Length: 209
Image: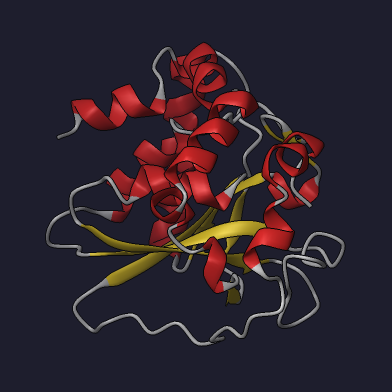
């Protein structure tokens, strides 16, 4: 579950309706490529990566556990993380570029969760679908460690089955901008990332436009 801070702020679960139906299959158009990342709160990963030119859609979901069809109520206890499936145009932006930006929008030194969200379900990961992508990620992580002068604990993993999250989680930052803004601010995401990387995610993304 989201932290006590969030539950106190806006009683999210009661307001959104936990039992709505959802589609389990995600189709990626033939002209697009896809990649998967875990960066803590998937609302925030969506909000950050959808700002990148060439990224066409970011879908919140769950991955990595042993139990199929996870839900927001049970994903973490069944070994899943919150993840985001990124659909992008490889003619406009590359796998390496997205991953290079992504790791600079998270706390890569925290292996217990992200920011105010604690527990395995909120831990970070970068995923590969091919050996070439694995090699790219190894280089990206090594360069990141040199940049910050610290060990990066974000693991490089083979891409598992993706399960889309409930509809109310998709594009949450656009549907509920006030609630999202309060959550992100109180959770300390931007300030923590700045402390690690020297730049807030918003400033990084603005510099790429």
